Amino acid sequence: MVRVGQTFASLITAAMLLVCSGAALAQMKGIEASDREAAKRLADYLCTTCHGAEGHSKFPLYPHLAGQQTAYLEAQLHAFRAKTRGDQEAHDYMWGIAGNLNDNIIKGLAEYYSALKPAAGKPGAAKDVAAGKALFEKGDATRGVAPCAACHGLAAEGLSIFPRLAGQQGQYLARQLTQMQTKLRDSPIMHGVIKDLNLDDILVLSIYLQSL
Image (cartoon, rainbow, N blue to C red; front, side, top):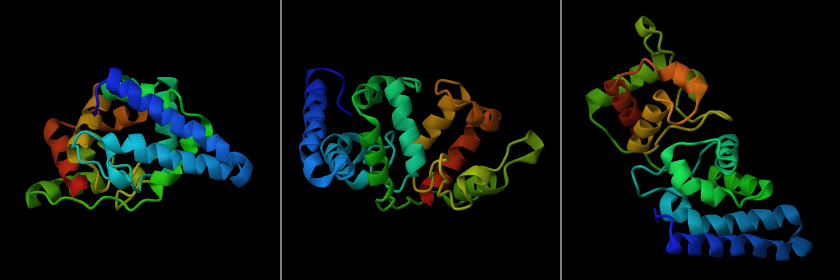
């Protein structure tokens, strides 16, 4: 990801000009169509820097967006804009990007990415995949760990506000789980669910989910 500075500021400025140019289409296409087009242009111009073409990230610590749940993407963009999601990457990158987005552009971005084909999974060691699958589907009653599938779906496809995890970057998943566990990323529900996971649990879960 480009660091905050002159080059990054130039990208933001240019991207915002692209978004604003969508207003010129409003009279011809209607506001909904113009916002959808502006959102796609913004995604193609700026979001691909970290999240890749068609929402398939090439960087292990930046998430795939393709095929993600619309409601989840909207909620995260609103949180970035409001600066209520305070993990380091949000602070360093997404606050500045989302700060200039209006509700219609946020909705357009969410709909654009959710409609794209999800990234293909990456195979992992069979032992790790099996351990992660068991924990994801069944949890661990001895430690009071609930099954992840209860909210994220048996195939980890997500549901509404609960994000798609299938095929997601393993390193990204491991980092987010660690940050939510330590409250560096504020997510009270997730903190309660994963607070008793150990590092091995997080590792095998991430490997399994990346393999889907």
